Length: 248
Image (cartoon, rainbow, N blue to C red):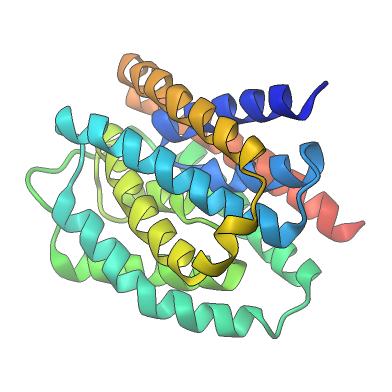
């Protein structure tokens, strides 16, 4: 199978995840770029940031138009996580790769288990208090910085379980967090962006953007509890894969 077809297929799957579930994009993009398309880990993480930034921003506009973005909560989440994410990145530089992979797997498994055990998402009226949003965002930023991955797959459970957003609002708001965080991380790597193979990254991104639109429609038709289960299964699958890879 040609690299172009693989890029289109992988991009479509990742777009569906981002559009319907509000996360999982970077976690799926990096393995796809490495194992399917032959990117080095460094190039894969940079390319994934470009892909996820574009796709998340595109999906965000649609969710915002439907009224499913809590702007104040999302911006507090993103702003509160920047400093802790930078500090976490310093800590991550001192840890072995296998430890980081295992830690990621544990965190993802815990989040998935919580989502599977939770009842129907609680609804909120208006915006969440700034203290809780900032505290949750700082915690998320720390975990994201230490593990070196995007935060969407952790943001949705936090927005639902900690801040009490409805699932669809959590999905839309998480896209805001992903966009801001991905842009910040991509800015740090701006000097290496022109070295990417855009003959692969471009079609990958285009397929992801189109997939995100379909994912949004899928998310709008599904019940909040169903989205929780789907999201939890995705998280648990990623956790098991990465834990197995870390132990080999």
